[in-house]
Each structure stands twice: as structure tokens, then as C-alpha cells.
Length: 457
Ligand code: NAD
Ligand code: UGA
Figure 1 (cartoon, rainbow, N blue to C red):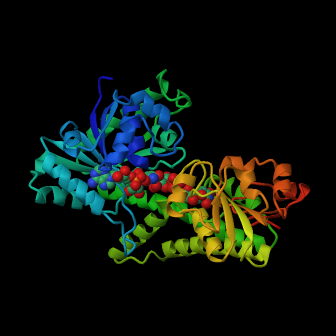
Figure 2 (spheres, rainbow, N blue to C red):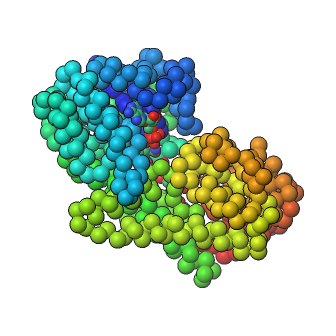
Figure 3 (spheres, helix red, strand yellow):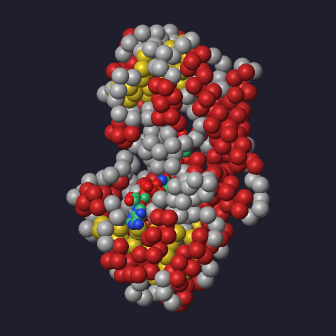
């Protein structure tokens, strides 16, 4: 581990925490900083604030060895050569990214400087943020030669975050000079030269079958745009297949066959062609809006992105109407809702289509019994149990006596339900599947009325 770099990661959320433990995993010395004292206390006691595969093991492996946690930002900055900023950049009032957390952190870094450091934008930020970060450092009295700013966007997905970080499709380094690019090259060397994948103590599944990750060096502006453009393109792909699914449904075609047929074209590819309730999460909705705003600021009307957003919003309405259409009226009906997180394998409920739908059903007078394998605690905190909403211990308890069962999140376990047991639990054997987890013919064989997305009823 001769080429270990001292790294400070600011923000211990989904990205910061994963980056911190993964940098430790590839041999660096990491200080992870958060201003949420409760989170830092929990982490220091070995607790894991988010549900993420492999994270508990990685934390246990590196806590107080490769990685330490603190709320003292100056300590983190002063003992590091590279400072990764991984705080939130939520949607602001005009659709633009709210960069106030980034600015607050940069001001604090400026006051803690004790020598040359590279500030790394890990958060998703609009183009030219690197210039604003530089300007902010200078305004706070830091000399120009004392720092550089690099854009190193993160492409991990929640639910597979550790694997994605350690085996990325690409690592993008947006640097405007060689000195800062070189430091980032050193940091990622175990992944880009492949040495990590041959280590015996590497995360299982990361061993030598993995080719070295491609590291692409660009300008900072290009890197900032690569991140926004990638997320917007993936959102567009999902909206495209969702729009096609609506056509498929009307003409009795099957969206799963259509997606398979399209995906076999290597220029299109099979990924991100799953029709459903529309995309959610803390990133696609805000990043599509922010990218649209970025273009607008430069006098470019990126209307396509507005259409992507509209199709996505419409997709949820279509599903809601499908539920109403199947049940005639909603007031007083009992509905079992499977899934609350914005997708499977995570407890993240930010911008969750599932949670939005539960809210709409309650507003329409329905009684909902909800179940999610990981997100119930977070859901309960913002949508407490009431006369119309209860939380069940499992899918079957949620289904007990329900007029219909709705599948809202693509957790694997929802695709492997004991159908006989489910049939017995439901008042009426109606399943409305927003994630296409079952084959329609199979459900009909088991005696269900089965409605899904973009497939013949
Ligand atoms: P998050 O909300 O989970 O975590 C942000 C953390 O920053 C919080 O723990 C918060 O307490 C901390 N923080 C805020 N202000 C601080 C300050 N002044 N000092 C120290 N800590 C502070 O956010 P996230 O989901 O990890 O996303 C972070 C960024 O990464 C966003 O820009 C997001 O768009 C981007 N991103 C997220 C993902 C993802 O899957 N969540 C993937 C790629 C990129
Ligand atoms: C997404 C990107 O995939 C990551 O590359 C990126 O780093 C991240 O956003 C980010 O910038 O935060 P994530 O939001 O964790 O990752 O989850 P995805 O797997 O991309 O799913 C996003 C949403 O799209 C979910 O609601 C999911 O259900 C939906 N989706 C995804 C579909 O409806 N269909 C699909 O085919 C794929």
C-alpha cells in the first residue's frame, strides 16, 4: 500500500459513506466528516445509517483502521491531500440544483487550509460549479496555488453501491491541470490498473474476473456535463420505454417482448428498458430538472428533457387510474401496497413513486396496508400510521382481507410470493403489478385477475 493517499470525504450519505469505505478498501487513509453528529456517533459505534448491501461488512472491516468518522471538518481537511465533497445538491425552487450545502462546505474548507489540496466535486453539480468553488476559495483568502478543483462525478446506484464503486464502468476525472489529475489517477490506480481485483482480501465478486476500470480524463466542465447528461439519458431511456408501454397496452402487444427485442440490438442494449411506475429517487428527478435549467441558462431550450419529466409524471397517473379502473371506486377499499422505497434493495424513499401512490390512494379515500422489506421506518417517519394507513410485518399480512394487492417496488421477494397463500389471504384475487414481476399467464393459472404495465390484461 505504498501509494496510499490521505483523503477527506465530506458528507456521509449514500455517496460519501460508500466512497469513504471503498477508498479505505483500496488502500487509502480516509477521514469521513459529517455535520450530523448523531450519524457520526452511530458510525463510530459501528452502526450503519443506511440499508446497502455489503456496507455493514465493509464498515466493520475498515472502521478505525482505514476510515475514521468525525464532525470536525478542519481536522479532516488538515490531515488530507484530497477533499471529496459529497453533500446533497437537492432541487432548488427554480429547478436548478441548490448548491448551498456545497458552498457552506467550501467556505469551511477555505478556513481550514494548511497547504496544497485538491478539492473534488463528488456531488452532482451543474457545469461551471468548479469555477464557483475556485472563486469561493479565493474570496475566503486562499492563494491560487494552494488548491485545485477537480470534478469526479459518481455513477453508483443505490442497492449495488459498493460493487458499482469498486467496479465502475468508468471513472471520470475532470481536471484543468496535470497536478490535480495526477493525484486522482493515484487514488483510483488500484481500480484502473486492476491491482485491486487480484487481491485475496478484495470484496468477494470483485476478484480477477474484473477488467481494470477505464479512467477518462476530461476538462472539469466536460466531467460536470457527463454526469448530468448520463442521468438525463438514463431517465430518457426509462421514459421512452414507458411511453411505448402505453401504446403496447392499447394494441395488445407485450412491452416485455418489445424491450427484449429492442435490447438485443447492441446499439440500444437491454438495460434501463424496464417499464413500470416511472423513475424516482433522489437523483433522476432532480438531475433532469437541473440539466434542463443548466441548458436554459445558456440560452438552449432542451425541450426533450421536459417531455421526459412529463412522461414520467403521467406514468404514475396512468397506474393510479388502472387501480381505480379495476376497483370501480376507491373510498373505503382496502389495498395492500407492496413496496415503499423508490426501487428494490434500498431503504431510500426520496421521490419514491411507490410512496407517492400510497399518498394518492389515501387521498382518494382508500385504506392502505403497506409493507416494505427495508423502508418502513423511513416511510413511517413521514407518513405515520393512521385510520387509513397501517404497516404490515410481511406481504401476506398486508394482503389479508384486501380488495387488491398492488406491487409498487421491484424488491426481488415480491416476485417470489407464495401465490396460493396470497390467493387465500386476499378478499378478491386481484393483483395490480406496477413492476411487471410476474408472467400474466402464470397469474391467471393461479386464479388471479392480473393487471400489469404494457401487457395484455
Ligand atoms: P445524502 O443526503 O444521503 O448525504 C449528504 C450528507 O451530507 C448528509 O449526511 C449530510 O448530513 C451531510 N452534510 C450536509 N451538509 C454538510 C456540511 N456542511 N458538513 C458536513 N456534512 C454535511 O446525499 P447522497 O444521496 O449521498 O448524495 C450526495 C450527492 O451525490 C448529491 O449531489 C447526489 O446527487 C450525488 N449522487 C448521489 C447518488 C445516490 O445514489 N444517492 C449517486 C451518485 C451521485
Ligand atoms: C441512478 C443512476 O443509475 C446512477 O448511475 C447514478 O449514479 C445515480 O442515479 C445518481 O446520480 O444518484 P439510482 O437512482 O440509485 O441510480 O437508481 P436506478 O437503478 O438508476 O433507478 C432509478 C429509478 O429508475 C428507480 O425508480 C427505478 O425503479 C427506475 N427504473 C430503473 C425504471 O423504472 N426502469 C428501469 O429500467 C431502470
